[in-house]
Amino acid sequence: MRSSLLSHPTADATERLARRRAGAKLGWLIHASVYVLVNLLLIALSAASGRGWAVFPLLGWGLGLAVHGAVVFLTTGGAGIYDRLVQAERERMARQPGASH
Image (cartoon, rainbow, N blue to C red; front, side, top):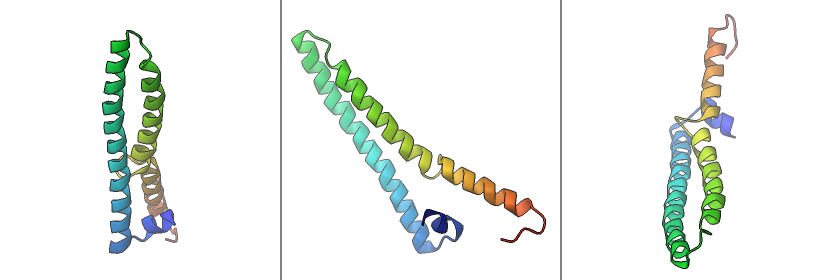
């Protein structure tokens, strides 16, 4: 379904795709904000207890946040690898003489 949205975008399909991408990016920003706030609290609690245990949730959750960010920003518009590959393929096909489109 994704390729059909990209190959023949209508105003409706473009709007849906734009909203989905914006929603994915907003979801990551919310995830990152919660990560920062919760981990600041955990760091404060860890420091108050005199131990350095806060590094473990910081690293574990940080890995999850990094993966979430990679998925969102590498697969959505602008920075999307998929979109760049599709565009490069379209351009390559357009340059081929006698290619049917």
